[in-house]
Length: 376
Image 1: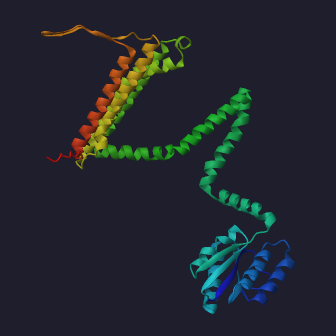
Image 2: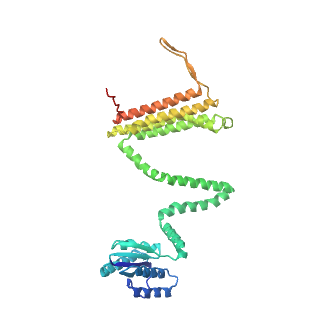
C-alpha cells in the first residue's frame, strides 16, 4: 500500500523552487535552503518531520505542498498540487504533516481527494503553548460576533469606570455599578432575552392577524399582575419593617398580591385554552390543567402566607360565622393557624386533582386501573 507523506504549508513562497516538491533528495535540499534563509522558520521542523515519517513507513513518498498567501487562491493552489500528486503516484492514503494550527485548516482539501490516515502537527516544544494561544486569539479576533459579545462590554466597562469615579468620587459605587450592569448583560445574553424581544413583534403581529384570544387575555393578565403587585406593595408599606422584619413584609405582600396574580395566571391560561379550542386540532392535557394549577398554587401560597402572618400576630384567628339553613343551624367555629393552613393545603390538592381528572377526561387519556378478580 503506497502512502503519500504531505508536508503542508500556506504562507511565504518556498525559496528557489516551485511546489510541489517531491522525493527525499528534493525535500532535503529544500530543508537546507529554508534553514539557511531563516533558521527560526518553523517550516524546517515540518520538513524534517515529513522525512522522519517517510522513513518510518514502507513504500512512502514525501512531498511538500505550499500555497502563497492566505486567500482562496492559496487554497486552490494546494488543491491543484494535490490533484497532480494523486494523478502521478496514485497513493492509497496520505499522512499530513503541518507546523501550525493555521496550516491544519487545509487538511479537508486533501481529505476530499484521498483518505488521510493521520495528521502530524509538529511544533517546537518551547513555542507550543504560545503558538496555540496566538492561534486561538487570532480566531477570536476574526469572529465578529464574539468581538461584539465580549470586547464591546469590556471596553464599555473600562470607559465607564473612570467616568463613574469622576462623577461619584467613590470606587465602591463605581465597581458596584459596573458589576450590576455586567450582571444584567450576562442575564440578557444567558436567558436569550434579545432573541425573545426580536421575535416578539412578529408573534404579536401573527396573533393579531390570526385572531388569537390569548393576546387579549395576556394583556388582561399583565394588568391583573400589576394590580396585584401594587396591592402587595401597598399592604407591605403600611407596616414598619423594623417592627415585623423583612420575612413578614414579604408574607404580607404575598398574601395580598396572590389573589390578583392567581387571577392573572388564570386569565392567561384560559386564553391559551380557548385558542386551542378555536383551532380545533385537539386539546392537550397540559392546556386543560393550567387553570387548575394556577388556582392550586394560589391557594397554597395564600395559606402559607396567612399562617406566618397569623403566627406573628398580624392576623387574628380565622372565624367561621354562625349560619342557618332552614332547620339546620351552624354555631360557627374558630380555626387555629395550623387548621387554617391545613384547609388551604387540602383545597389546593383537591383543585389540582380535579384538574388532572378533567384534563384526562377531555384529552381522552383517562387512566384505567385494572382490577384482578379473585378466582372463585
